[in-house]
Image (tube, rainbow, N blue to C red; front, side, top):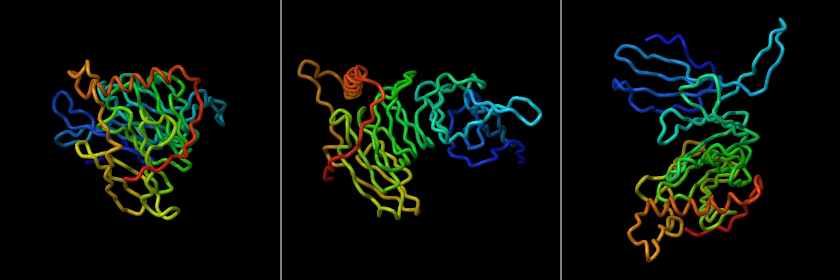
Length: 287
């Protein structure tokens, strides 16, 4: 099959979409070329449409013939909203995160001036879809609330951060991997300022960790590096503690307790001054 419309530069991420009304399989792709494509697999054809073209806000230059040119932005990652299939977040090489809708191809719903270098990954919290996290080549991991322009938390990991993920079992736990070959595990309910565990996985200066993933059912994470190695790590018990219900609320299920735990934390953080960088000099917890 011939495809006349395609990405012209590096494709950073490809994501499956939910099956369409007639059952067609479809997926989305984002690239440095500044466009997000929607691909639909038909019986004898692969249809592609442009969902959105990324432009830098308030960035115009004058062309050789005097016309005004709008500079394009370079997409680097995307993440669909876990409950609203029309909403997605786009990270860019310029450091911005755009909240977008497949229903509006010409405007952003929100612009987060998130990082100083490429945004490598975005992930929604499993228990509160208004909370998401981002990481970047600027060494920072940031926790955001939907439609709030300033981050709730900022962590400096001292090296480019290739991936970050919220844990599936806890509303306040996330993990990140860095170019220095380290895995960081945070539990904001235990310590809001530094990681509760740091583990060197590969030799420093020789291997860079690039990706990580939590197992959905078991206390394991896997991490990959730029030399082709995948490493499996088991989380120690202190990194996967469940919430104990109060004596008067023993009927509450774990999901409800996790939602309440995160909300208590957020209510405290919302009262703090915005934009303060949290330096990371963690105490390593033995696993």
